[in-house]
Amino acid sequence: MDSRSVVDHKARSLYEGLQKVEEKAVDTSSFQDQETLMLSDKAESDASPKLMIEDPNVEASHAAAAGTVEEKKQHYLESRGLNSDKAERLVVKGFFEPVMREIKVPEAKKLIREEVQKKLEQKSDQQRR
Image (cartoon, rainbow, N blue to C red; front, side, top):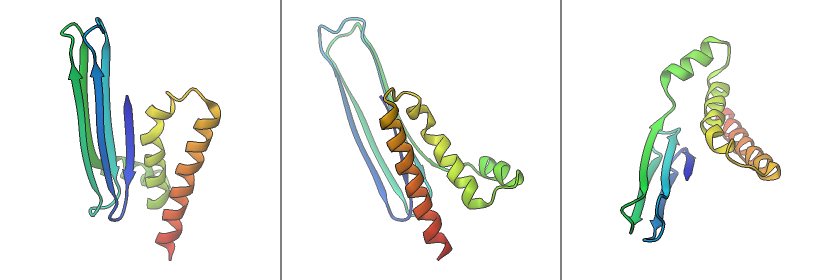
């Protein structure tokens, strides 16, 4: 399971994941990952991935990470003519792509992309005011 979130302003991302692998689940492979992209120094992220493994013959792992937009990515995009706002929007869209590739229902993928675009446009509008 791969989970992604983006937080801005004073927003807080809270992730609590639990994967349970029962005793009879021999040769199961399980992985959970949660990543948060923070667009503000006031934003917060708390992640608590958990595994409950009842069978020793499984492969299971988990990870969590939080960070900001890498300056190198931002600078590269700006050096190619994008303003700061457009560069950040492109990085955010790219951040979601690993998850988007896994969504097999085209209608769901379209709705998610539209919602991300809407939120990014709202942020741009607020910054212009």
